[in-house]
Image 1: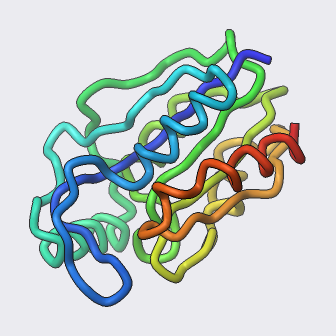
Image 2: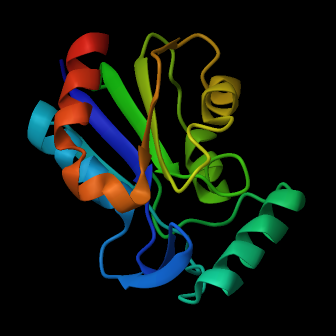
Amino acid sequence: MKALVIYFSRADENYFGGSMKYIEKGNTEVVAEFIREITGAELFKVERKVPYSKDYMTCIKEAQDEQKRNELPELAKELTDINDYDTIFIGGPIYWGTLPQPMFTQLSKLDFKEKTIMPFSTHEGSGLASIVRDIRKFAPTANIKPGLAIVGSNVNSSKPSLKRWIDEQL
């Protein structure tokens, strides 16, 4: 199996179970790195050309406005070819019920035909929200496996559950 993790992650000020906390590495990036350790997957981090605000409340307002406009923001760099990969892990934090819009910018550029997709999210109460349904819009013929939702404040201890999920699905 040759695998790739496509993910969006945001450091800076984040929400953790009722309070704000500054983090140097985003929760989803921690999970992506664990997936790499478990599977040997390559990583591709999706980043907006103009990053979201470092302030959490401003960031979520920016993300909500972007989503309401169905805007696909410009990315710092784009992945254009996934032909070499069999399994694609797709993940990010839950922003307003789904993945952040930069993920949809990236997903719209790729052909997922005959790929296995493993969706995952980091969240503080939203679970997977609608990411499986939303990924399917970009990958209608892919084999989309059951996803895994990880509470953001628990990412540092999530490696055993990630390993179990991967072993069960692949």
